[in-house]
Length: 80
Ligand SMILES: [Zn+2]
Ligand SMILES: [Zn+2]
Image: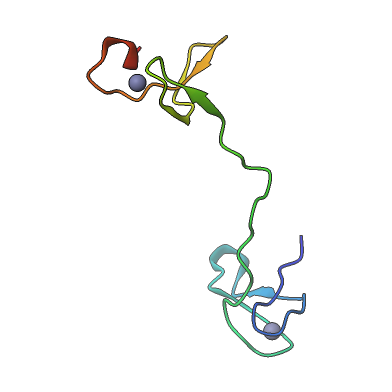
């Protein structure tokens, strides 16, 4: 995947340095260093489930066939 320069918007950024010790990236168009855009993974939606008390949150428990969310409050239904 090509890295895109955040300063000039062009691709072609490459790593500088020996292969075993790459030090930084450089854009050949504007000369910027370490200026590639951060990748933004888009299909990284967190799985959401509902705790026994009704609170919703990101799944934090998975016993292999069931994914659940526990809010870990003091109620007995709120932790595994
Ligand atoms: Zn550039
Ligand atoms: Zn709860």
